[in-house]
View 1: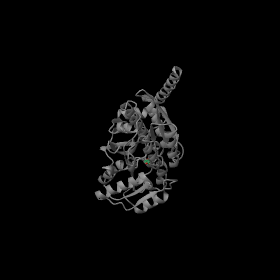
View 2: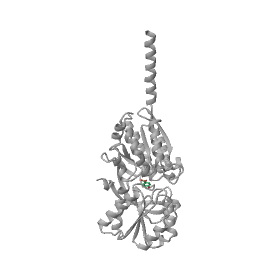
View 3: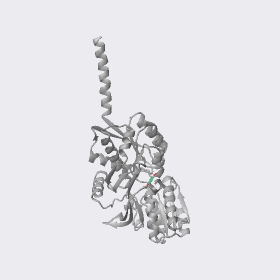
View 4: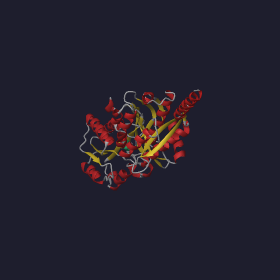
Length: 385
Ligand code: PHB
């Protein structure tokens, strides 16, 4: 009898010990496009996650943080499968990353069903956060950064604008937001052009821009694609046509801006982050990022860095409790100084409220930078009001 009790006791102890040991580690499943046409987004975010952990350690609320990085190659079916495996096999407490809108949308059902928070570091179509109460966004939305540009363009005397966007969620958001605002102010948008996401050839679209002869062309292309766009813009002589180039800051992405050459000079964009942002926090960030990763950080990196902050601070607030609802609640309303400036996660929408800056590409110290010249403070996504 005593022996049996002892045996049961030992088994029970063993179980308790096992559970306790398993709880010591909090796993974060980080899914990014590390290969394929959007690999620059994956590399930027991965570098930022590594920097955050280098600076802030790998223990939070007494628990060890383990990041499991998976490469989805930019394919939505793969993202969803990897998310499922991370939740079911690896038992991750949090999913993070998501380099493109379709990749985020493919994962939403997995996160919702498993009640696992999904921290979107890159994808920027407005409606993503509306798809599940478990989605929290660390980056930005296209309507948020586009609206101030429409205001600027009108004030700068621009009357007629052709829009040219990549044909998927964020591009449609950018096109709709720009047109709605600019037309409301009295502007004209005679043509709205949409370029395919896969293997884009901008030449025929640029010809149509030329034919419409607007004061400016408004452009959205996803991070990484700006280099091809600018090359074709210059090849077709549009930089010398008198048609101004304006856009969201995705087109003059800090990851590739410095290699674009003179064609980028004078391009006006609106955005939430520039590597040239003039603050002590950003200077420290850019220097540390460069030291660790050997390149200039872009806005994707900042979405990843601040996404890690949301996760760390949430775990601190829950004292290490990894219940999905508790973690999401602890992310809502977080307010902090980011390398981009002040950020608050709106508790109702789970989207960041942040400054949007007007920038102009200038050569400073031999390198091309998005130099900020005006700030619209604490901008919300206008489509979510
Ligand atoms: C998106 O897929 O939501 C996306 C990708 C790249 C960007 C912006 C948005 O630069």
